[in-house]
Image (tube, rainbow, N blue to C red):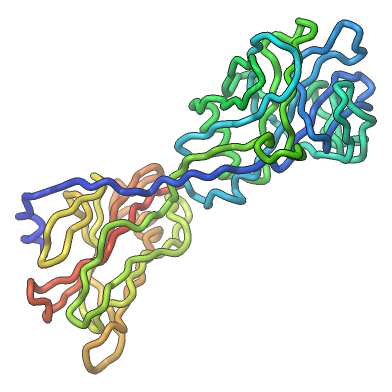
Length: 366
């Protein structure tokens, strides 16, 4: 097998369709009104307001808080490629205003206050207000919300329309953090870049908006930690071996991520071959090598299975996290992307002595 891999001269890189897109609805949202008593809110109303009201308003500044449960719809261990906040501007004052996104630093709640009024309503238990993360007893450290001063993204909002904030490196970092540490996910605070101009409010649909098209969405493009690709070779017993996995690849866990093979010929030797240069499509004994060279091979394993006859009762289980932790391959580190494929002996293969499975793309996390 070593000689065959070394002599393979044809390499055709093939794209791996592994990215997925999901639209995550807002889990919580609300408007903060700068009422210095902390008694004004709109947690469950159909609108969200950002900007500054008219000069006669007693609490003129409005800010929005919105949170998304990313971990509910994006699998653990995935890599966030891009993320876009989508809001529908349905009312408010005319004129272009820049609306900033800032990562919120403390978790907060949504209460039952409900109004379509731009002046807000009496705060209810659990509401986020200018003073409270959860009315009436849990407070922000700073009035107006605890948020990162660095702008994650910004967008000019003008005419009534649906707006999509750009996916910036900061936005991707925010969303990746919410996926990796769901308990600390607190969403974004939206504010105008200039909050001193009267009659500058913009009104957006909240998650309680009657029209679904007006509700906040977070559109995420992500790559799962592990993705199956390529086409397995049917073996001499008529079965199609299938690569698989369980757990999450990790540079620090020490174990718990297994790369598996099922529907393999019984009592046959085989290895897991992997590489770091992406996918490939190279002919190999009637099958395909799906991993670009150079290839590293694990120790030879035996498929086991039934002790007599020839069938597809064979299988492999290899804890890849244990291999990472062993240090036998210094290239297996957090952030590395590995492509891997099983190759087993198949003396009944008319095209040659081996059988090839489909393959895995593995992104190693922390």
